[in-house]
Amino acid sequence: MKIFKIFLIVLPGTYVAAAQPPNVVVILADDQGWGDLSLSGNTNLSTPHIDSLAADGAQFDRFYVSPVCSPTRAEFLTGRYHQRGGVYGTSAGAERLDLDEETIGDTFKAAGYRTAAFGKWHNGMQYPYHPNGRGFDEFYGFCSGHWGDYFSPMLEYNGKIVKGDGFVVDDFTNRAIGFIEKSGHKPFFILLPYNTPHSPMQVPDVFWKRFKNKEISMRHRNPERENGLHLRAALAMCENIDWNVGRILDTLDELDLVENTIVMYFSDNGPNGARWNGGMRGMKGSVDEGGVRSPLLIRWPAGIKPGTEVKTLSAVIDLFPTLAEMASVPLTSKKQLDGISLAPLLSDTAGGRNLAGRLAGRKIFSAWRNHSSVRTPRYRLTQSGKRNALYDMIADPGQYRDVSAEHPELHAELSQELRDWMSAMRQDLGKETRPFLIGHPGMAWTQLPSRDAIPVGNIERSNRFPNDSFFTNWTSTGDRIVWDAEVEEAGEFEVRIYYTCDPANVGSILELSFGESTLSGQVTKAYGSDLLGAEQDRSPRMESYVQDWTPMTLGKIKLPAGPGKLTLKATEIPGNEVMDFRLLTLKRL
Image (tube, rainbow, N blue to C red; front, side, top):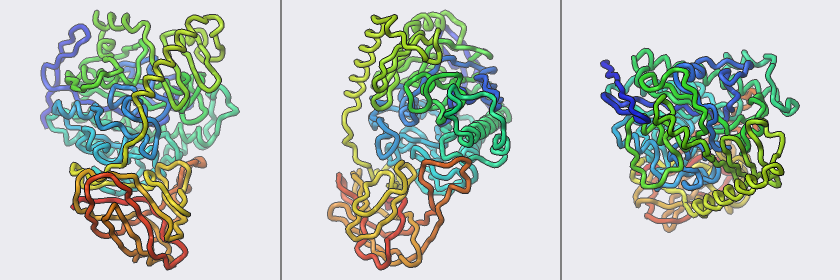
């Protein structure tokens, strides 16, 4: 395979491509804190491959993301604060990115790139919220906020349900490597959003054995809050991520693609448990420093000098315009971006120095639910519950001392700016009115998981966290599973249900209805499964356990276009209950 290398003329703050555009690989960790790298000084673990990105490229010292998963992903995809794109939660539709937002996938695809995403999407499932509808030619992984089993679980490939192959992070990496190997001469853009060290805490034995009995020398600022098993599992998962990053880097080296490939690495929020994080206050879900500070490493030998350090405040909203400028890809979004291109900061030029000067007074805002904060180069103001505190982040990086009384004017000024920003974000967010879209002609399959449905009657959700939950205790003909839906284009669809059913309960008659359209079918096959997941957990979980679901074809149904309630019920129940229900799929015929 012949590989064309790129040679760049670097003008002040500008990258000008003279040959083939650079490839891009963006690796996003899930719940990995700033301190979960040996690069940050943590001697509890070793992450040499991730660390090498800083040695061979650039490291950003103060880089900020959102306090939780889906908002950070939305901000990366759009270069805009997540509230502007309709993202206000992490499940049951609240994680969906508005369809009028242009994504980084759309932009790079329009510029001629082959695009792919492998891993945890978490910004919408039903097309066109689906990755394939947001500019990514290929998607393999899952669209929910978390998954219940990490070893060969049920996943999807471009909307079609498939079975995974081994530990999910290894599996996602294998897919990315395959995509790179098939790249040919066309530039590629790969988003590799891993789903670890997010719980449940599962990791292959080879990594767990390193940490199961390891003495932990570097501790959380409040060590009594640490959960030993959870902490050790998280560190093992981080070392697994590092191993997989090494596999990506080795593949680029073997294919002679290193020089002209941008590799970016960051995480979506602070750590998901009490462990060493540089003494910062806060973790995942917090708007304090420890909840929103993330590593950001960028390697690009053709355009970034090894060992580059960027001290200027930066945020995930900046990554879209930064990568676009580095790749000389035009921004075509009709919406104003909140982020700015940091590309000039990566070169020692007058343009970079001028940008650093202009950003000397920059403010970066963070919010989650009713908690918010604003960061300046020196101060952080946090409004969380009754706390409205100002911290000097240079004198007091751990946020131990409120200095509001010493700087009343600054406190009042930042408080007002934060209130104004929050008001604007709430106005942009508006109220949720979006149904779940089904039957879009742009994709053959539509998935409707229990996560997105409302149970009526006796039916219970397997866990209070909806993402990978299922419905159980379906015992009455008065019970319903209901989706607030809208059919995008009328058509005929094949309906499948993913379920388990004990032999004694076989024979229920199911009815699916939408407006005047109905479909009936009978459960004719028993399929049992134990609850799965506990056997692989390294630490007790909060999330739902899963089952080994089997599909049954319910039949075909003609659906008219328009909004309505898609309802699944049982009209006859010969046993004690109908089934445990996980997922309904529609395939356009």
